[in-house]
Structure formats: C-alpha cells, structure tokens
Image 1 (cartoon, rainbow, N blue to C red):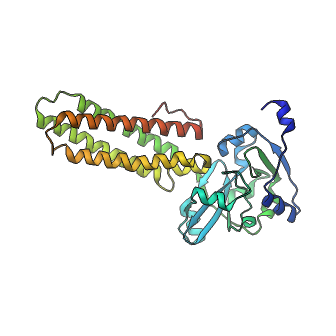
Image 2 (cartoon, rainbow, N blue to C red; image 1 turned 180 degrees about the vertical axis):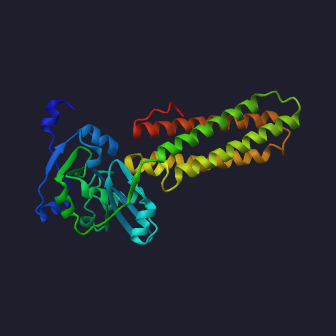
Image 3 (tube, one colour; image 1 turned 45 degrees about the horizontal axis):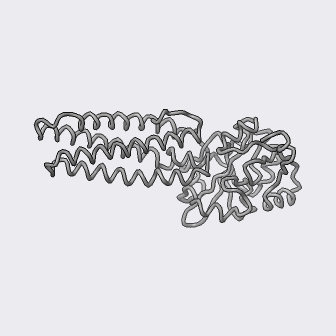
Length: 306
C-alpha cells in the first residue's frame, strides 16, 4: 500500500465490537496495518510485540460454542479448555464462524465473545499485559487498549490457563522426515530389478508396510487436537480450505497404501504393481509439497518441500 493509500484508508470497527466498546465506555485507539494472513504475521506488520497481540479462537461441541482468547504467540490447550468448561471442545467449523461473526471478515474475530452471544475464556497470561492489540473485525485494523481496561471489557469472561506453546510444527517436521525416508526406501524397492520375484515382493512389502506406518504416524501427529493442522487454523483461519484438502488426502493416500500392501503378494503383475506404487509415491510427493507451502504461509518456515 502506498503512502497516499494509507492516508485514504478509513479504519473501521465491526458494528458489534463498536457497540460493546461504547457500552463499556472503553478507551482505545485504532491502528492501521498492512493486511496480514496470520496472527503472527499481524504482529510483524503492525510492529508490535507478539505476546501483546490477542487472538480469538472459536471452539464448539454438541452443546454450542465457546470463544478462547489468548496471545497470538500461543495456541489453545484443548485439554485444559475442556476441563475448565466441563465439555469436549474442538475447533469450530469454518461455516459457523462466518455465521457467528457476520460483521467481521473471516478470521478477524474480536475477543468480545459476550457481544456475539458466546461464553468466553481468557488465558491467564493476558492479566500480565500492560497493553493489548486485537483485530477490529478486518485484517487491516487493530484496536489498541490498556491491558487492565481490556480485562474490564471482558469482565463476564472466565480466566484460566488455557494456552500452551506452539509445538505442532516441531513434532510434525520430525514425522515428515521419517515419512520422507520411508518414501525413498519404497522408491529404491520398486527401482530394483525384479529378479527373483518372491524376494523382490518381500522387500517391497516390507518397505510399503514401513511407509504405511510412517504415514499413519504423520496423520496422528498432524490431525490431533494439538497437531499441526489445528495450529495452522488457529494462526491462519483463511487457510482452512487448504487444511481440509490435506486432511482429505490423508484418508485417500492411507487407503491406497493399504490396498497396495495387500496386493503385493496377491498378484504376479509386477509391472502393473510397480506403476501403481510409483503413482502413489508421486502423490505423496505432491502432498508433501502442499504441506510445505502451508507451513511457509503460516509460519514463514521453508521446509524445502519436506
């Protein structure tokens, strides 16, 4: 955005948020920033401490919705939230967020859950902040507020330790490396001369089994409540559809790998089997690159396609 465009930019508040601030007689200022994709990126482009940036994460179960409010540098600890509420909460579906916050851009959820009819949990670490920043309902405007006044604004919310450090990325990287090594081993197995059919098939069966187990570990690591994919959605809600695409691929690739493993000893068509395994490896490679792109978009970490 050019300087003239910045001057022309009109900073606005979501109507519901504006009313909540007005009703509480809150003192605040609005600050414009370049559009951001993630809550961490928001702190960078706005040039503020990431610990002072507040993000809001919508959770749900069969009893309804809850808003979790925590520092952008951390993520929801689902077990703690569920214990605090006496419920089994998970991330809210994408379409429900748009419905619950109709006057906000998708992913720019303000922390005033009560104003939108949502019970709210605030992470206890925010009690220590002298100043906080949170999105005003779009991805270009921040509300700046005194920390004590922010807590007064959320006086109907419960305060508890509901946040944890971001660990999903580190764990997922380890699993991805194991998966990549298993892919390479399968590639070497199908590239070997068929020679003695039974020995070739036995080697391929062993490596496919290793690949399937590595991929199942990858799924568990990335799709768990504390896993990488939920961490991506918390940090960058607008990447929700890309995350859903990776989840769908998980099921399809796992099923294909399992089917091929079952067929290794059940067919004499070595050429056809080799082609199907080769196609599976190609699909895994494309999946790996899509995952790497997602990580880069969210965390700015370049995995080099890994």
